[in-house]
Length: 126
Image 1 (cartoon, one colour):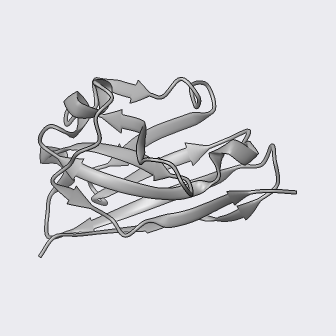
Image 2 (cartoon, one colour):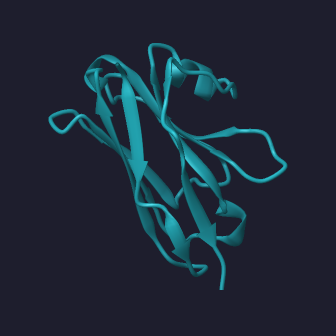
């Protein structure tokens, strides 16, 4: 059974930082593209950042470029999203995902993946 479990969410003040983690079991992430998506209340889920299976290609939404960094540690079977200079508009539930086509779809502005985590809440507020 494949499981992706996110952690690291919480409440932070504007300008603060958080690091999200996504630990995988039942699947070896080094064979898959990975991604972070988010969904704010009343909005559709959107791609935040994705990485190809090789790690050689990355995608960032324009709204997070220069502030967020995606990374993976295949030895730990874990994916990370470092989020700096957080803004109130970053408030959302963040989901990690893994799939064969995740990076390609993400780069094309589509939201689809083979496996999804349950999500972790990030709230940016003073």
